Image (cartoon, rainbow, N blue to C red):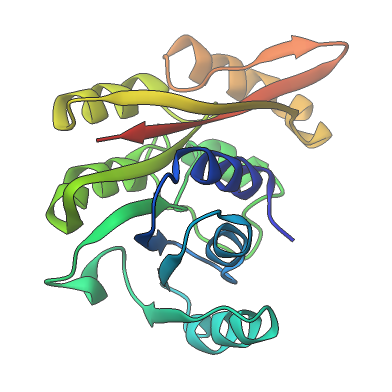
Length: 213
């Protein structure tokens, strides 16, 4: 099942796909984003996907076969396995949150989140390198989570690409455990590293998906 962020990315990708194209899904996990985009797109999509997981190839190929989708899947640390290849659309499914929040949240149990103090390290790495792997007129789709440094991510994107447009935005309630660490959230918010609101006793965050080209 897609996560909240993955769902947001899928909706955004389907909005901007306007012709047959080659797609790279970075940080593909089980392949859910790539598979659902291919199944629901009006246009033919040539799928490529990668993840750092040791089991990514077997898992994604099995899922793709079950849903009748062809996909080139590789084990890769971001772009390392895609040298010399270019794509029409890169979907960055590698998000991150501030490392202190990753520790106190239930999202990263048994999973590392080496995304830096502001949670922007991995997203910014993709933004920095994406142009090397995009065809002319290619696009990069990337997420901004409210528990990461939105300002740093968007400044980097706008310095790297001519156009950076918001495509999708969804709000969501954070896990209730987060309220137990409101002091950490407040400190990070005061430093400009995260953004959220309190509503009816719940921490409300958001996911935004941007298209850069």
